[in-house]
Length: 493
Image 1: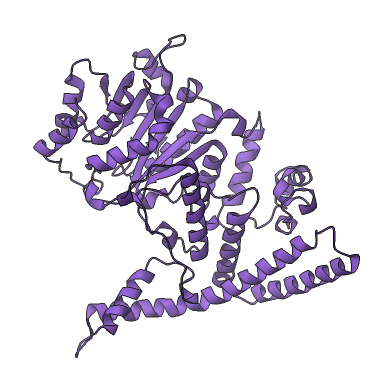
Image 2: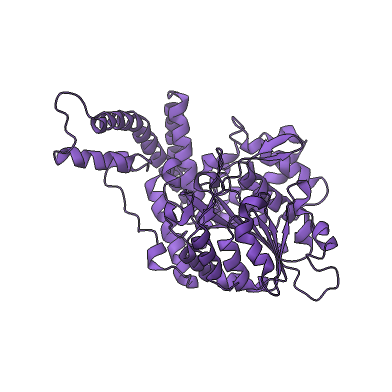
């Protein structure tokens, strides 16, 4: 079928209607598909003539656009609800010289490459055809996936399996370049691409170790939900935009997110998802709209509610920000103490000042309730994570580009969807673990990311004797700043 034929078919047939709590969400905007492919085109070159494994293609618009661009050896449509989507997908199968194939596989072997090879859907050993594989996965509207009797969100299982196959070089990863484009609900990207240290859990650790993940399409507000400091949001965006300029990344004007501005009020420094609504309501009432006569209007009740939120939030945010600023000042003094040009007397004075200010800071924290001191630690950790050497810690802050903006109307049913791009790291960038080292790594990550887990590194002594003394000195970020380390030994306590 031609590039526009699938869009014409969808327009003629209309969109399928779904029942239940989890309707399948499909991309229905041709321009969004074209913009995505144009941005990814340079990195998709190695996948020309590849095998496409298409999970939940739905009406097939994005699938057919990518198919026509890559001209794959075979394109496997794994559509479990075939009856509902056959009017859209069958013409792709029936086209002359079609490379489309349909399978209704939904079991645990859906990523087993030998299964596809046995049916001639992928090239076998020695076959000169491309052994590259591109997975397209639409988890939007797919509630859970059952694995050994347990239910997991499909976007989580897809990301986890991709990382684990990369780690062990199994299935398609053992055969050639492997990549995954994952459509998911915009709110579901948080465990995959966390914006804050507090949101960084076990899945994010594994993805950072074995994959590069970029957000191609997304909706704003994720960092506001995460309560990230506005200055960090702006700094991260500026770094991403500089990378885009350096690498000449394609971004049409209508897909570019607006530039962020510095907050002009101290209590707005932590960007919250309801701040914009509060500002709009305040402006409306200042202009004389929604003013109650005898009975309060719904808008007025909402304004009072948001004002109460702001007062309570301010009581926690402002002291935490002030203490985070004090921690930054202590860190600067700590780095200054490593200056070889300092006289012994000056180094002694700095050390004494650090000890005194640190003691005061710890005393202040000890007097706070848990909710308040946790806010301080989250703020301080996020600042360090963005500016730590040799670069930002979070994968989101290392992104190659800013995501495209999109409209809910470009999806059916109208939803906010994100598109994530997973690429395996080359072998030289993957952790060189052997044997039981994989088990120890998983134990370390599990301990560090568990709720109420350790705040320092001495828990290593509980895992195996000698682990602390053997491992910590090898982490350059904890080393002596005068020898190229990060100078943050305080975090090892």
